[in-house]
Length: 130
Image (cartoon, rainbow, N blue to C red):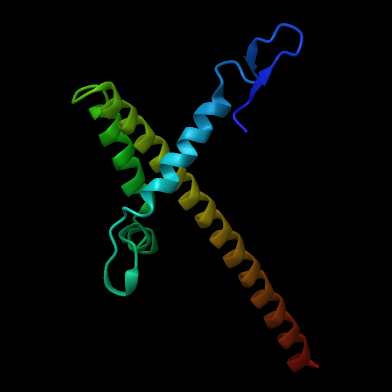
């Protein structure tokens, strides 16, 4: 849904959010989805981005691209080119958020497993002492 509503009394369209963000979010979704058919793949159809993230460089790569396209925005080509640069900054921001979320989830998993190992070691010590 784009967040635009028709006022049944006046017939005027209004946005649910102050600047019709719902409509813009739909355009962002369309852009992001369209990029996945364009991404570079290497051996075994591994996307370059997946390899970059797996190597631990996902956040830096994403932030670097946010800066690159942000600095470039409005300095080359048409308004549509500027719009595409902004969409790229948003997409790389989403990727950076994903990387942070995955790192946090990995850290929680690591901490949970470490706590389980420590509990097992304590129980093992109790058993061997008895």
